[in-house]
Amino acid sequence: VYLEDLRKVYPAARYLEALIREFDEKFCGAKKEKKIIDFNDIEHYALEILEHEEAAAEYREKFTYIFIDEFQDSNMLREIIAGKICRENNLFMVGDVKQSIYRFRLSRPELFMEKYDTYTLDDSICQRVDLHKNFRSRPEVLDSVNYLFEQIMQRGLGGIEYDDNAALYAGADFPAEP
Image 1 (cartoon, rainbow, N blue to C red):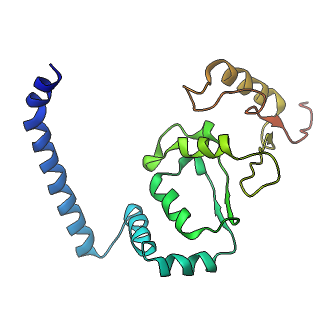
Image 2 (cartoon, one colour):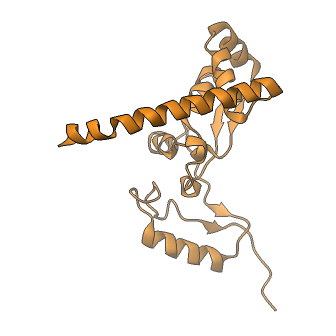
Image 3 (cartoon, rainbow, N blue to C red):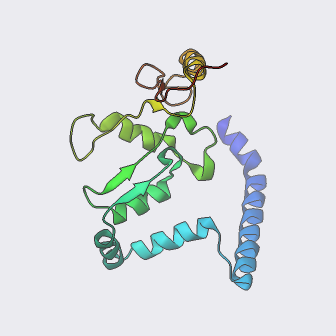
């Protein structure tokens, strides 16, 4: 039955592939004609350059530190690029998997979770520092958000077990409401 279904959709799949290839060819041609590149091009050109070990080595030496913000929205391409230019002890990542709900630019929140699960809280090269304090919101807001997330977030939904380690706590004192 499965093979029969594949045979039925094969012509449509081939046609779709041809359309995608034609669109890509025209889109790339238009960008080349106008001498423009997009963000995706920048990522791919960067990787192409870093495939040459001498270039990667030069960048590894050049950067004292590499900081990646919003790491929960990283993708495999960015992970490979970072891996080519970082040294053993100069990569710092910040992220919150609870914010990765859109899969922006093919993001892979599981990259974040793999590091979250394997990095230790002990002083080490692969050390994790949990930031629990929120300095923008009043305790009443945080209590409500924490309560709601405790009810609905789990590994299978949201990528993290929402417990005391995932919760946010007030980090600032706010004046009392009049």
